Length: 294
Image (tube, rainbow, N blue to C red):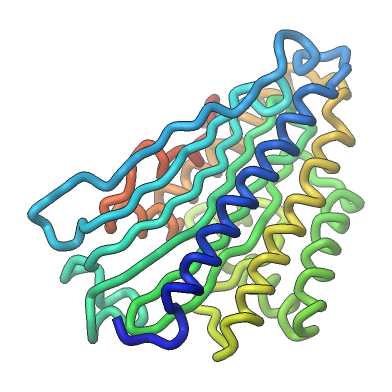
């Protein structure tokens, strides 16, 4: 596949980084599980640990399914009711229907994609849910995309600002233009039009990101992952020992319902995975374990 932005060396570097970040995030979340004291429902029972399950794209006569696979890492614990940290690297050809929606695929339907996807649903309604993903995609073009966002049931300004400051520092290290642009993109993307409401308190989001300098773009994408790694576990620790009420837990279930609605109706990653022969279980791992619609 002729493409100077996205050669084999670059692909290998990106894949290795996503897998390293996966390992670091899993370790950080398992450490939180061990440290909870309570007294609350999160301090009861045993600390959770990640279980990993590999998957491969099945052989098929359909040319849109060619190769690759991934590894699901799922934790069901006492602090994190469900946390998923998935990595995948896949390649093949886009279907005729889908290729018109992907930059560079209409000229040549072949693609390569690698990335990490993280979704965390805490047990406590006082600890915010969170999402982070970064990815590299190569068609006749190449680009990075991703971001991170926070979804508290009961937003608090200090918590929100800590999360945003981490991403602002990560972006500003590369260009002071990035954070306001990516924040606005996040606010617009993680929005439920049918509810006329935001999914959470935002963060950053970027896609089709190619400045022409692969090393610089990869460095930004690494810093986006590091910002989440360094910030979210600390936010979880802040409130993981606080008690909560049944009313707060019910509010969490309703908020999770909004999360389900967004991911099934609007999320690009969900659509991309389902349209490229990805593992359905891994794609839908983002869905929360206990939801409600009033």
